[in-house]
Image (cartoon, rainbow, N blue to C red; front, side):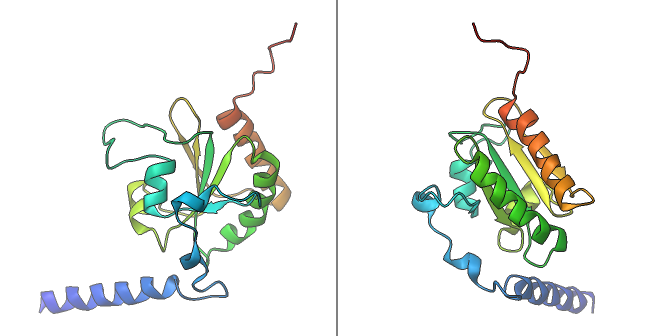
Length: 176
């Protein structure tokens, strides 16, 4: 009897999570994401959708480096863990697009759909969205979740985090 109950719950879970990735206006939109060789191609300035394989090659190969963080990128990055059905995620999307155009020559901006990439979400312990992973070139990454009270405050929050965590601007230095 218990096994039947567990199997029923498992089937229900699979059915529900399967619907999440296929509902809404952008249904199937993430399925046409470019392969790794094309993820950095183009100059549209928009954040790039990552699959697990993209993530392993461009951010962190957690399968190879199980004990220590080894960043694989060629410049710092911001990874947005999101879902299409998430209201706050929808609010942050245009902000990150704008910041990607502004900082795109110095920072890579990526997006990970937690419904499509459940393993990545589990590996990084994503429990609420939006969650953001800030990966500097040197040192450990930093995660933050949630947004501010308004669109402008959220944008300013991102700018501050980008400047402090990724660009690590040193305002005390002077040029001679």
